[in-house]
Image (tube, rainbow, N blue to C red; front, side):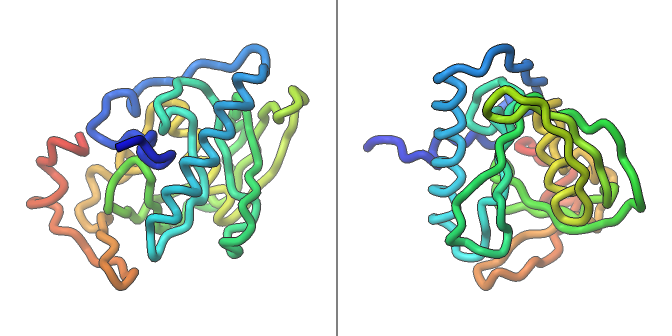
Length: 193
């Protein structure tokens, strides 16, 4: 049986997810190929899920240790399959309030968390054409950017809440988030930690 694009997404306990990614030097055709693989993996994963949208992906999630992230242009329209590409993204400023909200991750199966994040960030990156780009983001997109930039630094959303027993949730078959038993399902997990 051949691998589908979503099968290239690595999940915990794969130790590569805890490694820092390397900067991209020159943007080549191979870089474009990697980005196409990332988009294909995200959309294929999404097609296999009933209640979830493939919002973003970092290159390390398909086992490429490169500082590349892709973020969906429209979080509301599942038919819009366009992604913003950010190469070597760096958060230059955290602003606003710290807000808790739910996060999931394609590399952490079936676990969601209520994660505290700044509600505004400024980011510097390189676009697909090799031009420097700067953006300010707030709300959900700011959260997504922090989550994905964390991936390039070997950090996962669960690391922000590992000492918060009430922050972990499971997505049930009806698309509802239900609390997980921290002691039984999280604290001593050999998969997560």
